[in-house]
Image 1 (cartoon, rainbow, N blue to C red):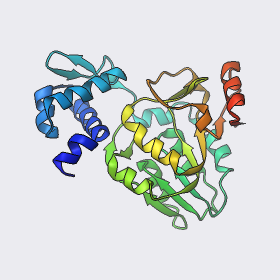
Image 2 (cartoon, helix red, strand yellow):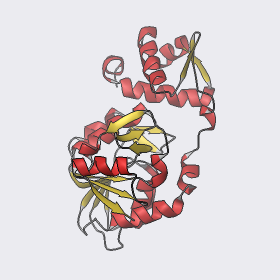
Image 3 (cartoon, rainbow, N blue to C red):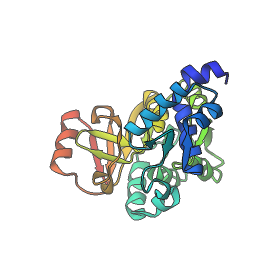
Length: 260
């Protein structure tokens, strides 16, 4: 990628790089980031304001740091263990939507990774994904065609993001997209980080049907970045009955609800 394209077209990539570097260092100055990314300090400050607005960083004099507790945020493996039974049940219910020769998209996240494990043994279709755990799971499924979406590794979600990913996705089509999320309520569906949005939106655009996989704990979770409203979700697969406010929202949009 040229300096020009990084400067003007690569804002999500820059912010991914900033977050990766910040998790390693704990604090970075604006000058350091400007040199590392080969962009102006004004561009860096604009990116930092965007990250601060979504609660991912804290602006301090001369630079940026992680928010309190940010360095100790649960990793992918820890999140995968949380409510693992509910996630397995959701994945099993969602896998029943898959036809033998389907082309499906699998998003990042722990429940989406569980979906890959739950795919029927006879499934011989195609899986498109940017999730590293899903790709690893597919190593044991030689009958399945697997298309991995490249990009820069987002360590928290063990997924590839960035413009390299988007260029491939835009040329594809899937019948079902199994979408992951960090939280949801009656207003819509949310992610923890703005850098996740570009890949999620690109996958949603090429899907005939978007299937949200979200256990009931996501109703009590908080995440600052809106992915979409329920008008973009065709099917919600969850593990417990929905609160009335959320149930009313999905009725208004016609979203099908499957309770595992």
